[in-house]
Image: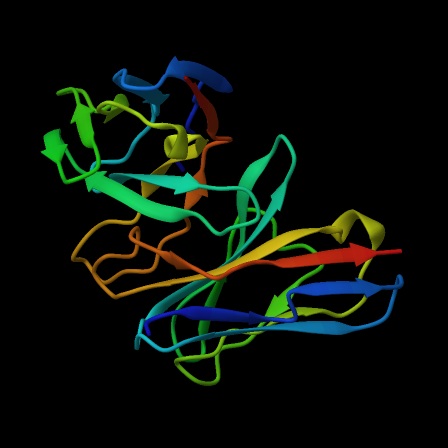
Length: 114
Length: 113
């Protein structure tokens, strides 16, 4: 089962690009990489998911190198409202319909200030 | 509105008194899961289920039971709660084929005295 490692915390100023890296050295061939955002006292919220190379949506980009042993969540031009904990999740093969144990990392606490 | 609901949201109980936390989703999702969240430990999966009557252990199943008799419901049962089960609990669901894209409930904060 893939174990993930993330930085405990990061600080950024409003308007900057933030990159959060997750290490997952023993990722399985069929595993996907998913990132979540969590605000205090709320459940995590899905941000983005990918398998390899680069994925972009309206809120973030996800970069995955060829060896897939790490991934980087990129948040363009963060604002104060992006202050949250960000979790990397590895597992959950897409489109196979199979059950899967899911293991979250310990999360990265991002603090955005003016 | 598509959502995952949990009840109760807050619960204080005593050691050994059986309790059940309910979870229900209205999105017809196949995959459902329970997590606990503790400071410094992130989210840890307790149990998951891919379908009715199909459940499996996550990373921290000890002291918990689940059942999946209906597709929409996935209750978490603590037969004999202990203080080390004091935690914030989240239920989540996701559709078959996109198990990783989970919808989370609002959480249940449990205190076991």
